[in-house]
Length: 342
Image (cartoon, rainbow, N blue to C red; front, side, top):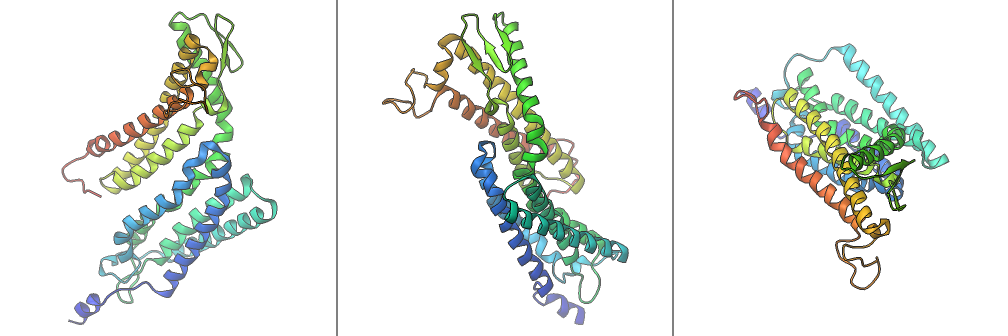
């Protein structure tokens, strides 16, 4: 009878957990402040403006599952976490908080840069997972189970990890592969034109046509913008809509992110190939006009934009459609009748 009464009492977050939550909210605001400089100056990362809203949505969507883990719910009972693991997580949490503080100090003193952004984003990621692990409660005065702690950490991976895509991705991936990606895209498009018996030759990142006209594959055409945006979209769709067991969801999410990256690269190659063919037929200057040949800012200019912009928008639209269509297919792939639904 006593146990029933105890379990029927409304559960509330304790002061420590509320303190962790307030601290993480402040850290997220500082992370937004730091990465805003990237979103507002790098056209490839304008999707970053959506990150705080998507992060908040996923957290709200999972709150019904996460809240019982952070209170004295009876379902949290099980094999307790070893004391050495708790101490390790506490140390890692303090280390992550220290790294975050270094990043904020560097950002305030020296301005935007690779080191502050990396420190801030990874500090937030590590602190969020560590604080979540430590905040899980057991029923009454009993210790929570390790399974409950890891389940809570699993629920926080996307809200904490999405900040690694919107900021550090620029320094860890973008700066390292953009030049190589640009070169490869140019060579592939040139190869496609030659296979179709077009007499073109390559000069750096410029494709020269038989009539002497040429079209350059600029940095914006490297595909890094669609790559980063598709990876972000794939991560969000995977976090919200993919189903299955814990292992099954991780496999499906990884598959969706890989599919997103491949889709972005292939559609970018298709877009640049179309633009090259169009430039051969109508001249390279026609890419900055609409399909009727009207220049930008002139009367009658199409609402669809220039040929160049229209091709990019179509490629991004197709990428989103393919990603959304891939979700139900992944949910069915390898799913047995006994596998639980998320």
